[in-house]
Image 1 (cartoon, rainbow, N blue to C red):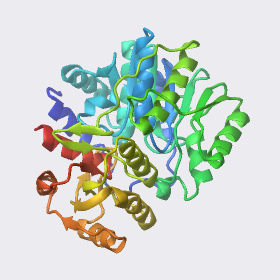
Image 2 (image 1 turned 90 degrees about the vertical axis):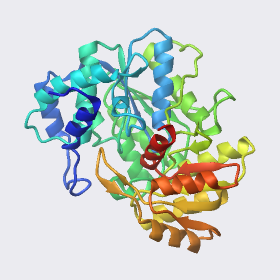
Image 3 (image 1 turned 30 degrees about the vertical axis):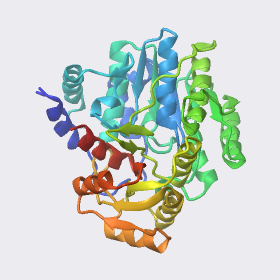
Image 4 (image 1 turned 60 degrees about the horizontal axis):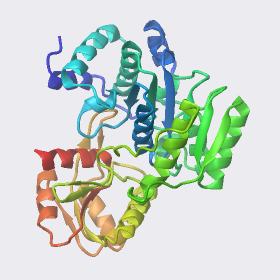
Length: 398
């Protein structure tokens, strides 16, 4: 019996895949069968499904705020979590209280029994089950990776609303190496009868999504970016998409609320700026938002999860104009998969080759953070991975 959040985290840890990151021939059949045994909770609530390469978590948070402002009882599930695993199951505007999360998970894991599910499958099914049990009016559901074969894509009701944010080259080892291939994976969340809001973006990505929507009889609205000036530049795109998605759910204009952005996205914490940008598209958006605020280059603590070299190089090139001094730690990430960062000496060497003039390898995150905070630059930034940001954030608020 689970009695604490630490116990819940430990119980979930046994579902973390520790072999190959993605098994060959992965399908949703296993999860669909498990959900069917639960009475298909993913079909017992209306879903606003959010996919994209960049901005989907922020879009989900903004959409939740708009729907709640209209008086709906909302559920929200996002990944990865930053401050607590309870972020994976949010009801009525925030994570479930620890005690409620633990009690519900204890019941749910009894239903999982000996089913061979992954960490992400368990938490996705748990979120759907909780939303059905607690009777939310609408569940805002963020995809994990891609869309077509993402666990969240077991939600297929005809009244689903799909919101698709900026699409770019990321997770290429899984989703494909070209923009059309990746866009096709994102468009895979669209099912017959759905309504779709798509952020205006690269015409290639747009055309793939529009073609898929037409093929399944889904109506699409193209959304122009724009939002409150108080939001960072990149968040205005996400806010506009979220507002359009909420309008589709409500059938009317949503209330004019902004809501909170998720943690770890251009968040200031104890004098350090945290942003989980982990691909060139996101780093470019971060740089543009800082430039709009008049913030120049500074000291940066960064590393990326292991990825194809071309992605690492592209991310470093995007980060270079922001960096006067680069601090590189190694780190590992558990949860949806067990992964490690690029080895710190390897990333540091590549950064020097790409033109970073001042690079320092740190032994661990504690040392790296101490080095960053001691730097004289006004900007002290942590970026490169949401997992890295989450771990540094824990050190800053301890």
